[in-house]
Image (cartoon, rainbow, N blue to C red):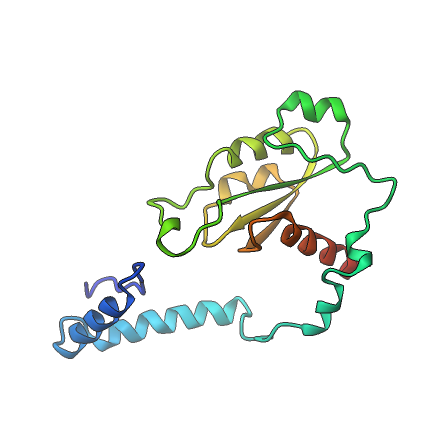
Amino acid sequence: MNSHFIVCARCGRINDICNSCLNFAFVSFVQMTRIDDAVKTILRVKFQMGLFENPLADYSLTKYFGNLRTRTVDPETKVVYKENPDSEFVKSNNFSYAIVVVGETPYAECSGDSLNLTIPAPGPDIMATICALVKCVVVLVTGRSVVIQPYLAQIDALVAAWLLGPEGQGVADVMVIMVLLEN
């Protein structure tokens, strides 16, 4: 335990884990310096990532969510929704771009526990099929970190969308806001 101290939480047992850590520290089973090192590491990484530069959301952007402009699609745009498309579907429609939404099914608390950090099927196959044929933006909807590195070479852009909700409106809001901010 002293060689590696990891900040962790197990669903439904957070109080037990916190109490155990404190007890281990009090009886010197885990040195307080180990706990301090773990916390310092987490804070250092967050500072390096710039998470404390602008700690509050920019509420001036909320005016874009749900307004008529964000809900309107250019009439010349062809929007096609297809669940689990194959390569023939993509080739036959001559798409310029694709927005590929993959990720986890909605869950709360323990029901989302997993023994690995992989993107659930059929997500990896869908990304491989579509992104090999057309420029694509992958919207990854998850409630936790998942391994994306094996897929980065095939995709043109990645949006890590954390818990947008179980319907497409959250995904649409994020994509439209990105376009509005660029223009």
